[in-house]
Structures are given as structure tokens and as C-alpha cells.
Image 1 (cartoon, rainbow, N blue to C red):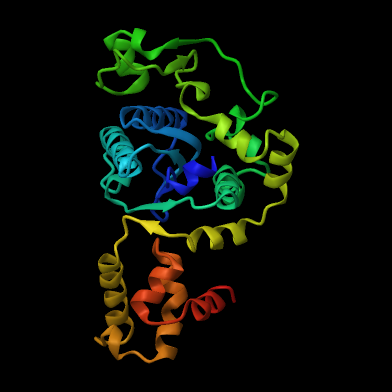
Image 2 (cartoon, rainbow, N blue to C red; image 1 turned 120 degrees about the vertical axis):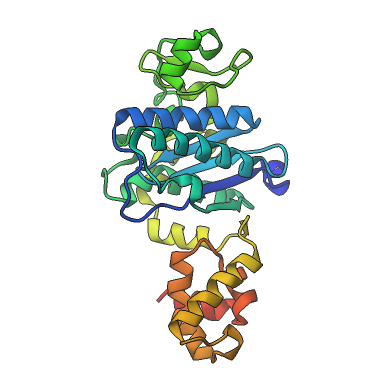
Length: 297
């Protein structure tokens, strides 16, 4: 696993949530999104390690063999779910138009933090009190006493009509190894690499449960945000900050701001954009220690 981490094989992927907009409104929506996650990963040759589906965004931990696979996977998912929601609800605001946040997992500790953060997302949102109480995540597939056995069939055996009804897709699934259960969900065991999580926690179910129960969500969110980001270029972030500065300081340029003025907008920029402390340091000309101190207060 250490070699895979060193080679940059693991990625934390998150779509930006649309504030005050509920995209997934009912069980059918969540089932469709679940299946699209599995199909998007299979289509791009990546493995899902952990995920949580929320009503307006998604978190995934992906294991990739090639650079760019994580980006292609989340873009395909967003295209599929956006098309589905647009046809069902006529939504103009969908995930298809939101930004992606993709960060590289660079240590075992970050991997464990990321797994816990993803599986506790519904707890953070106060939807439930424990990760195991939230249905739309990969939580139940880890460790032997948590796995749910279900009757399933290969999706490749579905008729065209069944494929359209259950999976809402016209993809060619003739060679797809995924399986679908009697509830119409692609089974966790057919697309989630549970052994990665179990190995990260040294095959100890007690350690896994203890870690999820004791972790500090705010601290994890802060640590995750400090990790190196992908697919949000310095140029794009500079343009975002430049517009923010112009609106806040009546047409001023970033280079014209004093250090105190830059510090006054740090929190707003950091918490409203998928950026990182190293990136903000490069663009705004402030030290990382100063940014860390401001953000932690």
C-alpha cells in the first residue's frame, strides 16, 4: 500500500455542493446516483475505495492506475447524473456545471483521515448520529461482520429494457463484471475495494470503529484542505481571487493590497473555494504559517 501511495494512486474526489439546492430528492435518485458511481468507475478502469452520496454532492476515494482517471471518472458521473436529473426534474443547476476537487493521498495517515471523513460526511451534516445509520455510503462493506450478503445477478445479463429501467443508461454492459441486487443497486462487493480500507486499519474492525467514533471532523476537514489539490490551477484560482478583491476593495488589484487586507479575505476565499494553503501562499504572497494561523482561529 505504501508503494501505491508513493506512486500517487489514491485520490480523494469531491464535487462542489450547490448551496440550498437538493439534487437527489428520493430513493430512486439515490439509487441512480449510486449505480452511476459504480458504472463511471468501471468504465474508466478505476476502483472505488470508499464513498458517500449526499443530496447535493458526492465524496469518493478512488484507486487509479493512470494519471487522469480520477478526473475522467467524476466527469462521467456528473454527466450521467445531470442528464438524469434534468430529464426528471428539469433542473438547470446540476453537478455538471460545478467544479471538482481532487486531492492526492500522500500518506497512510491521510488515507485513514480521508476514509473516516468520507464515511462520516452524513454525521457532519447532522443527518444521522453514526456512520452506519446512513444508507448511501460504502460503510457496510468493510470487515467480515459488516458485509451484507445479497442475491445478485451480473448486469451483463440484464435485458435492454431492464438495463434502461434499473440502471438508467444505454451503456454497452456486455463485458461489465458488476452485479446488481434485487433492490436494483449495484452491489458494494462488486465495485468497492474493501480490502484497501481493512489493510489501512491493519485488519482490525475495532480499530476502524474506534477511529470513526473518535475522530475530529473539523480537524480532518482542515487537514484535508491543506493537501495538494489537482485540477484547480493557480491561474483559475488567481482569477477567482482577483474578482473577489475587485468586488471587496472597489476595483483594486491583488498586488495593490496590503498584508492586512489580504489576511482579511483569507477565510472567505479558503472556505468558499476548493483551494489549499500552499496554493493560497503562492498566489497571495503570504507565508503558509500565517495562513494556517488565520484559518485555525
